[in-house]
Image (cartoon, rainbow, N blue to C red; front, side, top):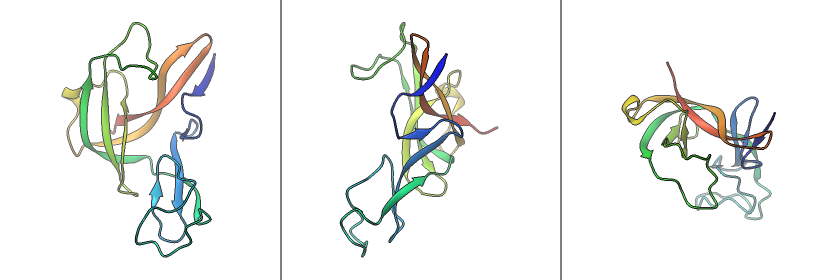
Amino acid sequence: MGRKPAVDGWFSVDPAALVGTRCGDCGTPYFPRNEIACRNPGCAGPKDGSELAPYTFSTRGRIWSYADSRYKPPPPYVSPEPFRPYVVAAVELDVEKIVVLGQVVPGVGVDDLAVGQEVELTVGTLYTEGDDDHLVWMWRPVA
C-alpha cells in the first residue's frame, strides 16, 4: 500500500512537517508557500520573490480554537465513505506564531481538547483510494 500526500508540496511525511517559505530579509513565514514576493508591508527587501526561501515549520503549538465537523464537506474535499465526523483545530505554532488549521487525529473529540492545549504535528490518512493512502497533516495532543 502506498502513502501519498493529499496536497503535494504543503508538508513532508517522514518526518511530519509543514513546508512553506520564509522571507530572508524580514523573516516572515508563509504557509502555504508564497512564491511571488514578501507581503509584509514592513519588509525592506526586494519585492520580486528573490528574498523567499523554502522553510520547514516548527511541529508544536497550542490550540487557538477547535470545532467538531459533523457534516460531509462538499467537493472538492475528498472524504472517506461512509463519512466519519472529525475535529479540526486552529493551532498557533510555537516558533512562528502563525495559526494553521488542520484535522485532529482520529479518536480525539472536542471533549478531549482545550484552548491553550499543546499539540504536535503528525500525519494521518485522509482517505484511501485503491492501494494508496492519501495523507494530510493532523494535530495530536501532547501527553
